[in-house]
Length: 278
Image 1 (spheres, rainbow, N blue to C red):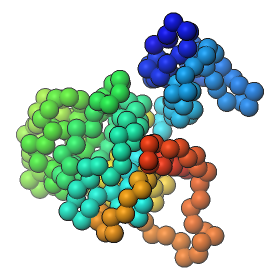
Image 2: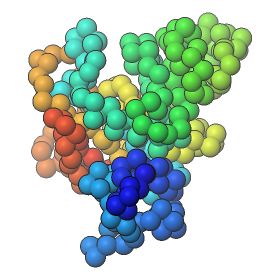
Image 3: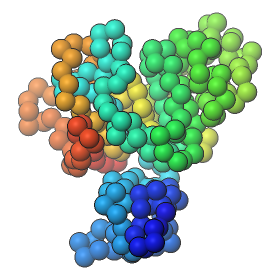
């Protein structure tokens, strides 16, 4: 809220940012053009409020159809230990950042491997915000129907399954309240670009690809991302479950070098890579 001094604090700044989806919305929220062409709060604001506008306003204004991804990893590129333990690679500030990304998305997507290993909730808990639709990509029927995305009722879940075998029968028989089933006809329908289109047809245009490393890497490699957030923690695991892995270029000059912004999240470092239009 705004204190007696009239200074805009972080809580009120976040509430205003959550409602921004267009340039006119920025004016209504109290953001004005600065001399450098960026945006600043019209009233005096705390450093935290200024940080929130700088970090999240570009995402708020990204438009109704935008695909972005997030990964937290060790300094040597792993998202979990060899046993799958990922609690927690990065710190509390990165967890808060992740939940803010969820709050600005229509849908949050995870692959079957992450859903099986982590049993995630995929809800907004660390900050105020609405829960996105939870999308579980499960072409081969790996995710138990006892997992929380199917049973906790905390947010709508879209279960994306393949059209073959016993899993298709389970989908046809129905699942719990709040769970919708999308049956895709073949493996080609699970291609990142086609998945994004299928979600958009359901009104889910702002899509966060949260994990795991295989799913995020696939979206990145197939050029289906507008933006990628990678948070790197100052820890060395030696081996484990890798983060980003895809077929690379044979020479350095052809490597992917997108425009990047950096920020500190406690001891961690956030890299925000602008990938352009898929």
